[in-house]
Length: 476
Image (tube, rainbow, N blue to C red; front, side):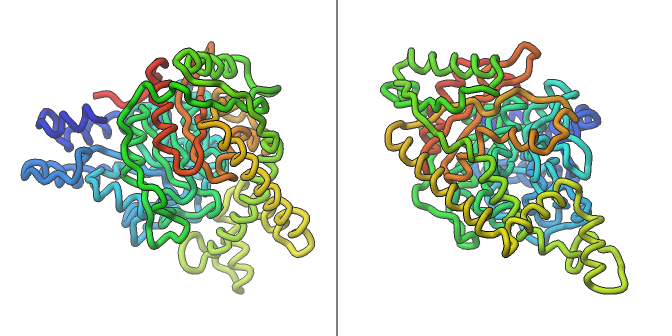
């Protein structure tokens, strides 16, 4: 990204030219990939012309002024369609920007379009979209991951230099791993959720996806920070771009949880992760076996809580104020018919599960018990970080699977086996490429840090990245 900024600053390329190149690349690849739901060609070119005018007056808003960005389609963009990949909101145009959108616009970034996702961010493959499946740029027969599959695929295919996604149980890191890009799930509260269509408010976070660690760090620096409109956001520790130091791994205590290297982990994924660990050890890091035994219960806990919160959050979609409406003779029938027509099967499944666990007869047995287990998971993660600086694991048990391969919802949910713990405990976690399997499919490595330790995990990821071949990204 620094090279693009330098070219723009020197006048060797204009923002308009850069946007046109992105639009051309999108037109070349979209018929196959389906990474975007909405491409705002006219609006992007207007924004680009405004950026060029600012630079001509030496009034650039930031070094990144004029660089295009894609935004996941569950993040509100004023006047630009925001569908959540659902029939319910296929014509919805917000009247305001999400805080993260305000902040990137303030830096002069150009919103080129809205990317595909699993409907209302409920999924791990971007197969549950009312606008079709997003395909993996490395193998169109395979999924791009989810729910931020469109955001990851757009970066991996070189359609845009970077993008924004959301992560509730792995929805940035898992598609980043499948597509061979870098994706960060920030510490809970470090980025405002205002204007993000909620799936599970106690778990959701907005984060960057980019081709390189530094690019992800730059984008994160633009969106991080407290927001009075989001009571869960905090400025406990302001983020500054790291001064990249390869010596950061000297004496670094790296936790290696045995539970993440057990049965179910594909051999090539394990080999790639262990190769990185050996490399870090050779550079001075100290590998320390740890136990995160509670991870065995992370998926069950996550699914119980996320369905409960989703059931509550999606109650607002009733066909009255906005969205799909099916006329009926009475209000209750109109509610039922509108929700039946507007929501897809996975959303309906999760609403029903969530309603069940929140019911009076099952609340204590399921929801309250899940909250207790979540506390145990948080405590175990806190104990681990009292002993180590970072925790390194594979991001996913396998590389990208074939489209249509996981018909059983339980199999799909297990795609978040290694990522949900970071959301449940609120810590930060980053995925970056660490090699490829025999088919040429990217393998992702996850680096977890304690609360507000984004700078550290970016630093460690930067060291890892220096020894790994880049597998995707935007090119001029």
